[in-house]
Length: 436
Image (tube, rainbow, N blue to C red; front, top):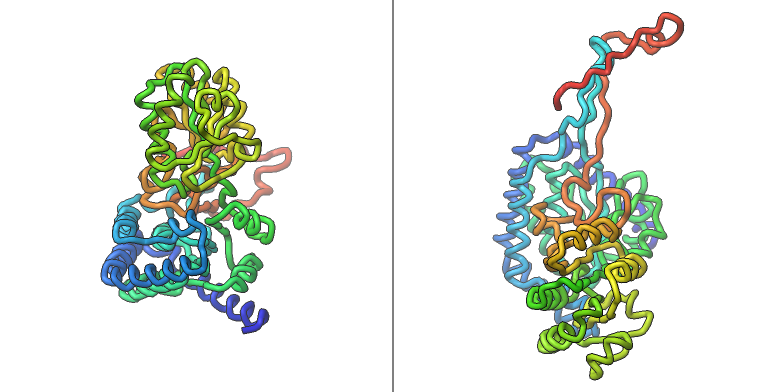
């Protein structure tokens, strides 16, 4: 297929998705929830087909030498699929974000303003591996009244085709058109999708740093995403050592390929000699490669030297860099310089120190005495997430339903005209607020 044919075909797909989304936008909460449950049931019925498709994808990717972090994201075992389906049902239980009245104000007698939430329209989701992302995203899109065009990576094509096939079969039995969900599979389609600002309202990329940056630099469509997940744990001088070790190990090894795993460990100099040998032993027992600055190497001479590039690297693997700092202020300065504004944690028993960390670390997630791996839409109670945003403007952090809606202003009058409120005898506005 030529580039021209791809573009023409994709415009038709996007136009159909937009039309179907316009119908979805005005459906009742009950109708949307019925569609979400139908999707969950269809995915359960197609479980074996989906898992077998993923096995085939994984075998092909392994034969082609896929990188280990990407391979881990690609794998969709029975437990991941079960959790993804549970996430679909959790989305069904969430409050409907559409049609909420945010402002209800009388401007004058008989002239009433409302600000009401509504869907964005059509979402373009581009992701490299992690096929379960398709399941999470579709459920959130339908609940928020949006159409969705999915573009999966070449390594996950069979898995995503099986998933989307099941989703569409489930929707056939509901008031939601299967056309609200589309799947693209080629690189040419990615490039053309980024040009469809007439039909697509938001692009959400999920993948490597270079991939997200490529998307951000090659579209006029608004992009929600994060380029890196460089997360830190700071072990304060008032830390509980046992607690600090358990949290550090979990934050690094529980799923090292995730964007919310820590990449740098900062340790206050006053406890470094006690803490570092213990945490190093626990990490190395879990096959974590350690790198350290010069002061760390004095305590752990067997580990590798950390270099400047390590502080700004997202390993997505069992590798951790360690730096000793002299103060809370130095730790915060390091985090604000090198972090990607994703998620950073302080381990301390000093509440005032934790509050200072919360106030001065400029990240989407700032945690105290818990693993950074909690930075996740499912764990936040969002049901699922469409992605992580590290931008300063909202939505920020794990993005669930609230990031997929916008609002419109509605004014109802009875022959009111602006001329009545201008000039020498201008009528005053009442600006009386009503409960929403």
